[in-house]
Length: 281
Image 1: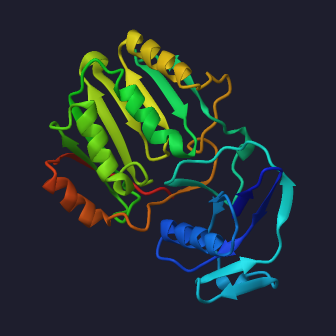
Image 2 (image 1 turned 180 degrees about the vertical axis):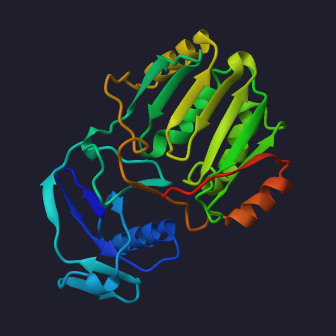
């Protein structure tokens, strides 16, 4: 499902295409939208389907390799949440209404003595917000990358570490150079670890930012930084991770898992841990 946002009115419509994985399908459809003059388009939902079951009023654009629904549903333009690249709502409804998701954060202290912050970040603000929070860490020990078990290998979760990436500048440069394989890859989580408070600052595979620390001052410092970045503290917190059917995907130009592992080794990463994860039923 594509949403096109205009100054006063917006509309949603559907496209279909055949692709090897979701990211490829999303990018092909958005490219087709640009060719068709559909402005400010973004992918709002995604699902798999049987091409034999498409509606009757669908046009096949062979050159663009997409099928387009001729109907459009218009509504007044309003501010709505756009998930960062790498995560997208599924067509099936979950427990909660998608309209409940909005930018913001919550903080709490869990029973095990961990102080936690979780942040929902929309669209293009994800990376810049992460870097601003990294700057608030008193020290940096290591950068971690987690490759999720649901990506290509259906059972193996891997953790790769690089202790040479221990400054804000080095981390920012590495993630910028490998944007498609890290920040925009919905199968990869990025964690910056600090010895101070045993703090983990991460972008998880749901493309939310999380802070887990044993130091209350770090929690307060991060919350203050978020407020300066115009994030509101929410009483009712919703993200795609909880109660919503969703998909994880990677950009079409990103590396396969095998090629990504090769790149990590070439850039000084070491396999620290791997777990066999039982698939969901």
